[in-house]
Image 1: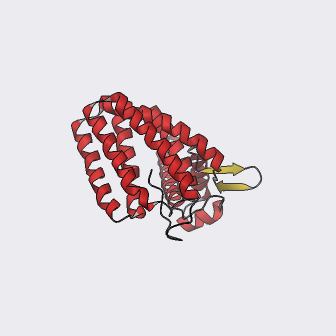
Image 2: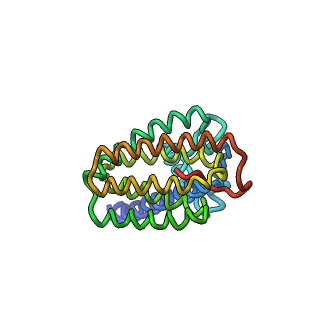
Image 3: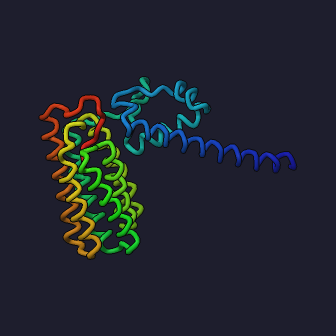
Length: 242
């Protein structure tokens, strides 16, 4: 009995270690996918990744499952795991879903946001203006992500946040293939964000809802225009402002 009791803490520690490793592997693979280091359609080899990251194959396998649930990879039976590819038709549909979700985020944020959250978002918009003058998509993109994440935090709805992040991940996979063509849209996007935070700060739920819906639909239109134009800076790896 004593040996069984002693084995329980060890088993618990091993379980915690495996879960921690899974999280670390998942975050690293997610970073690589969203940064474009792992391109859409790329095959992910479990053994290679385990060796590269210095972990066993178990955490990598679990990370693959989590990434599939979040919409970043797909598993093909008897073939393996691949970074997900999203077609233009799928992207159009996902944009419609994202627009509806963003509208809900705006409405709830306008209802629930706290003064300190407003200030944090305004600081992000100030940085967006500075980056926009330089037309630097690489610097702009993380600010854009931070802006929408802060609004999502202000909306204070975990179920909405989980669904929203999955949808946004799917669009990031697609947009990465069509960026480096729309840096001139950064000031337009920044003005959108400024109007949104002003509406949210005033507690105008309907206006915030409408502005965020229109922002996403307009982003989709800019995406289509970008696809019809050659990249402004080949190989830059810039992202569309949205």
